[in-house]
Amino acid sequence: MRTVYQALNPIDAHLVKHALDDAGIPAFVLGEHLIGGMGELPATGFVEVRVPDDWYAEAEALLQTLPLVNDAAGPVEADEDDEGWLTE
Figure (cartoon, helix red, strand yellow):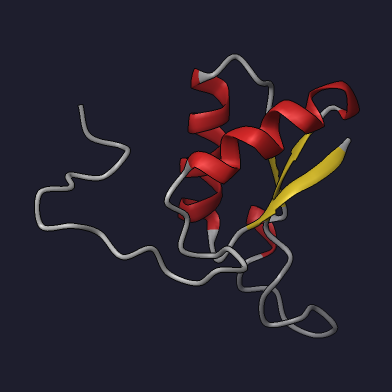
């Protein structure tokens, strides 16, 4: 299993997971149940989306096409006519 996306929160992670699932790529959300944990856990950075090793390249390619807020390039600027990638 390899991490393809470090999520901001469980909702963010599940949106990415569903996009991967829709493309036929098996994906798993890890760490969502750690939210609210006290003690030695970091404040953020433990919710992630993982895929099997054989699907990593396909998952990375798909994530490059999604308007993700938590990517290295920063927030995606949406046009006024853009309804987003989750609407049909």
